[in-house]
Image (tube, rainbow, N blue to C red; front, side, top):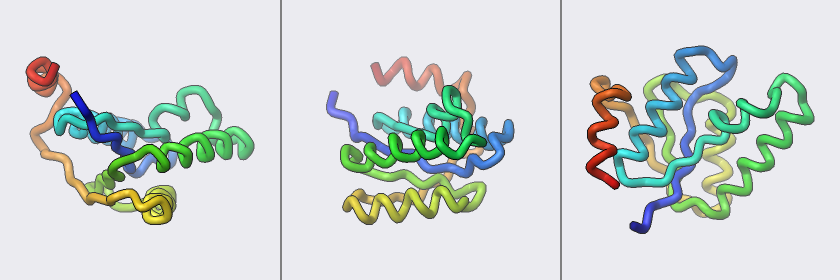
Length: 121
């Protein structure tokens, strides 16, 4: 299976429960599309403290390198655009990565989607 490498952009500032839930749903949506998604804001914030400028910088720089490998930048727009999302869109443009605006199906939930994932593998 040859999957598209997709960078996921969602609002995340403040790491609110809703922003985390939404980012996870975006990852799931991408997986259900048969893609290989990557969301640095969801991954790196688990091991780095983004309130410490140096650690945030490390996470941002590591995320930037993914734009050289990405086939697509998926921007999930249901909850608006953050400044980090705008920066991600600019990085995608600078690296000639296709940008796609997306919205999540209101009915998408993890339990139902697991059945769909079983059919993909």
